[in-house]
Length: 305
Image (cartoon, rainbow, N blue to C red; front, side, top):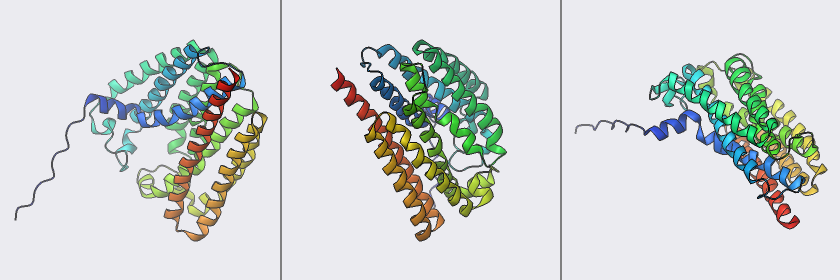
């Protein structure tokens, strides 16, 4: 009996190619913390949604463009290692479905218009957008990602910019303990999250010579460092108490639960299962925390009117 050949995968539409180039999945996930910071500022300074509608729109448009630009720059620069890793080898920048020159110009235009849109909200929002873009492209993508086990820590700065941008778009002062707490929580959260991914994708990162902590130092060192960050996460939760006892308790419970899962899960599971459970909980942690912040803030705004 003659074996059937695997069908040739259909060509992607231009919209799909562009979506993968600018990483729309990451854009969507980062808009969540941006809105958390934005709604928290609305509640803190007693602004209504209508009162700040233009700033909200500019923050949304600007954030989407800046995040998309960061994704495009990253895809352009990382074509060599993306071609080695299983989860990234089919990106349009690797397969040649989009030309490098096109990606470069796309990233440049998105950067310019994104920062311009954020500036129409507040100059501080624009500066933070530029800072996040710069940190992601230069210190992270072009330098630390391929050179040091602390690449995740360096990249976490840009990854934690969305809540600051959202807050700054509404009120140009990011010294309030609540937003500083949300920023630091978002920074620290990224280490346990990405360490878990690196353990699960150990072989791919090793083949691509990306020095992720679990690849270079092993699972035991990663476990210890993860727990240190989770303890810091618990301590930082108290900053939210400056605005709301309820938000502080939610953040505390989530972080304590994560540490308990890490300690007991490591003892009872193999490294792959432990990493998977840590990854899943990291998603639950951020989803629940940011949802709580957004709902709390919106309810507070409604009752203040």
